[in-house]
Length: 181
Image (cartoon, rainbow, N blue to C red; front, side):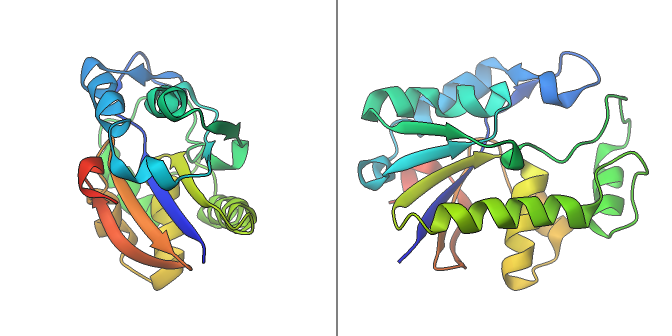
């Protein structure tokens, strides 16, 4: 039985047009501390994370508290979007998730394929695993599981929130980590 705790990184502090370089805001650091108190960590065997600092900083307090092995995998990094600032980010995401959008962004199929491949390998470990990644990438993964409208799914993934997937089925939608067991 494969159980995954999918975690979206904490709230970020924009520090320029390239979101891949943003760190956690004060709110994001608080979310990371709160995440480390979640009861599900007692059963987690290891953590897989995006190599982006905001993801690593989100999970670091839990890794230290529970002495967990932390693996990074570039396939868990956010959808590549280039470094230009996007005024209507929600509109760009809507276009992207419908398969039409923005020209410089990583193709939906490529991003979906890499996250599905990565998570399939993680599930084969047979452990309960925490996976720390990003809103768009986690959306592509979950939409591939059950055909949920990806844009609405994306809109429902809050920063520092946790979802539970068991045997390839979404059991608990993204919610407060202290409510996830």
